[in-house]
Image (cartoon, rainbow, N blue to C red):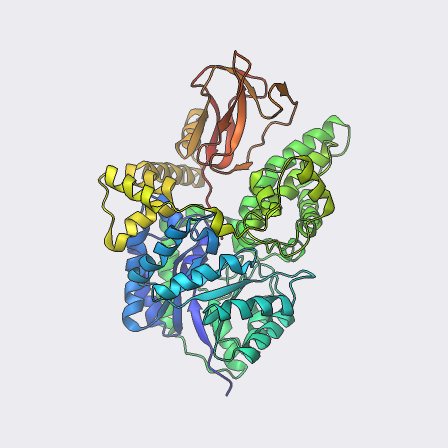
Length: 593
């Protein structure tokens, strides 16, 4: 018989890859005993990535949910693990060192054993500090290799990174195949290369099912020395999620590996409970498309969890492009033709921005560049003319070292726009912030929580935590749920009700001055005719949304509130507004990992 293979259940990731909400604390408590009784899992994913933000946005306390879900697994010796975005920790943008360091103390106290630390660029400078802090807190650091398929992402490339993070103290390596496009043969060779050099290091494979390669990849990594495989259960397995434990166990058992048996009565209880949660409320937020596999993902390399948001973004661009084509007397494009164009454009953009692995947030940036290129090319303006600061930040190296080479066209464009490339260590650019959050907690007379977990939550997710504390988050979630239920039941909402639901979960961009709206300008006085923002466009917190030309001729920037997706434009280019008028509404992001 071959070696023993352990299984992990990525229960919470199943939900994140399917929809935008997570099970409540009481639901996690109910399903945990059935997961334990299945008898086949040595590990369970209990936290990480966007999970805590999603809990807060639903008006739930994420710390209580993590403690409640970890407790039963801790008691029976099943290890718990979490997804950790390295420099970005549990959010989409960089986190100060003092907040990151606190995270490991809090999460260990809450019952999480293993942080799965990754950098979307595979920059070890974003991983190694977290390894050190995890060890200090008594956790087992699992360093992660973000897998993709490109000319530079070779076995040698990944093996070199593995050597560095293992030398820094990582006792485990995760092969994170977030889009499921890792080629099985390469993954097998990589697993063997790491195991041959570091035989005592645990290797865990995490592969999404989207393009259909995951089962072959699992077989390859196991035959070359992998130790733990991430799996899912019905009714959320397969699709853009993960392979089902039953199929994985059967395949490996037939191959001669030692694997645990599955208690099928317990599996069915967990399956029934999961379906109950779907029917109760979570199913209203599951994108039906995420239940299906798609070989198209192999061409663009985008993570399966992005398909829903990508199609929504594509719809807005599609309308704009067809409007332009129609005005030129040219044939309009079908949805399928647009999708192929988008995938082709991603394939064009990706090497030119240096082959960043397509994982959050860099998958979003590459996809957005491609979408905007399609729009501006249709308008005859060429490529790379509508990139925002987030997209440029990736290219310039502000989030870490790009693995490949930036195309000379983009280098020259950056110089023309006065943008500076950097090779600085990203985490050294962010000042500590914990003291300011401590003061905010004290000023509001908020409890710091057990093991400072509430302080950590505010520091990690300040906007969402404040809305949770005020009750606004719960109000928005209930409005969102009611809208989803009404839509499913076929209820006919009045335009006023549709607007109210839309605005209940969005931030109004309000004009601070009387004046005229412009969406771009050069210098201090000359306005530039430009395309208005499109519905679905994304903004970072504090990013400039537009400018108001005041009666005294000054151009005043108007920020995009807390950032997110543009859902409504109330004032067009050149419109005259009064102070306090709403210019637009921006809905905060529901973030995929």
